[in-house]
Length: 210
Image (cartoon, rainbow, N blue to C red; front, side):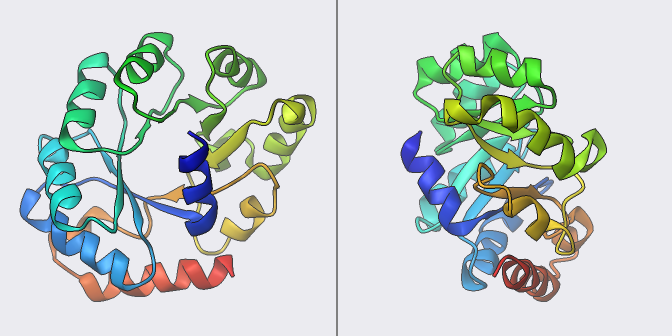
């Protein structure tokens, strides 16, 4: 887990992707890498997710590929078998957390309250996804919660409502190691193979981080 946190703290940006077509997985990964981003979260919202992760892991080894929206132990197992190097969920489910731990898959459960953060910490989850970040209360809420749990060493990846205009506000929080976002790789851009626009958004996001 420490290795994953370190990797995220270096890139600071995790594009969250919904892929409908496996054939677009590798071109997308290559686009992100060539524009400076070597991390991606493929959500388990479509049938193409597992094979997309597998192809990226095999053909774009410089890309750190993870699986998102893991809601069941079966999905955790499939993600691990496909080659995912990390897993993410929108909420906190002890059953899913336990499955990830049994599979040896670094995992970030979704949290939005102090209670959920504490429950996740009680299961050893020192890396957590704050979701939905902006609608839940934004940086102000997260900073208020962290004041009470900062001493635990918890590290956070906010996701939800984040874009190039506000990402720096989140990364200014010391416990935030990276931000997830779906605006970089919108499904319409992937479906139309608009790699140029995705590359542009990637560069803009990285520039905003700097």
